[in-house]
Figure 1 (cartoon, rainbow, N blue to C red):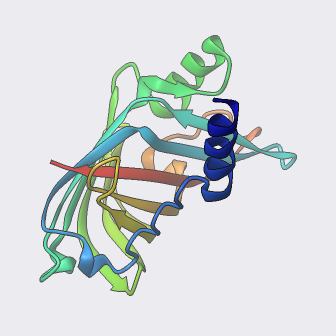
Figure 2: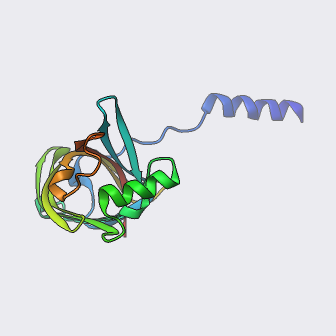
Length: 196
């Protein structure tokens, strides 16, 4: 009995776990359909320079996103995002609530939205151009986007993207604490979507 167990253990060790297949990185391989945000694999980060000393980092804990995709007409993809501005998180509940109100006017504007108008694509990279509404003000915003891949494996049909962008908070009427916090806000987005 022991020999049988030892042989099975050696076989399992030598064979190991099969490696996961790499996702397809050609956007044209992604099937047509509507894709919605997979919230457990999504992050929306904002960073602002604090007194020239550090990049103060904030996270939004609640947001929704979706897009419609047709590989025959990728530039027509429409992306919509809704962010709960009251979910701003800096690691301290009281400071988070104060910043949400001071910077984002979250009490009167608890939602921020982004709706795409145009996609410029170069292979797996490109730009997503759309309208961001924040604090009740709508301004055009451009995000640099990289398609990380599409996979239809053990976690279902899903696609991943990374995006970055830069906005000026003063463009949206946010000027409080300007002696301490810079005007430029860096956006860092890592998301996965699942096909409906």
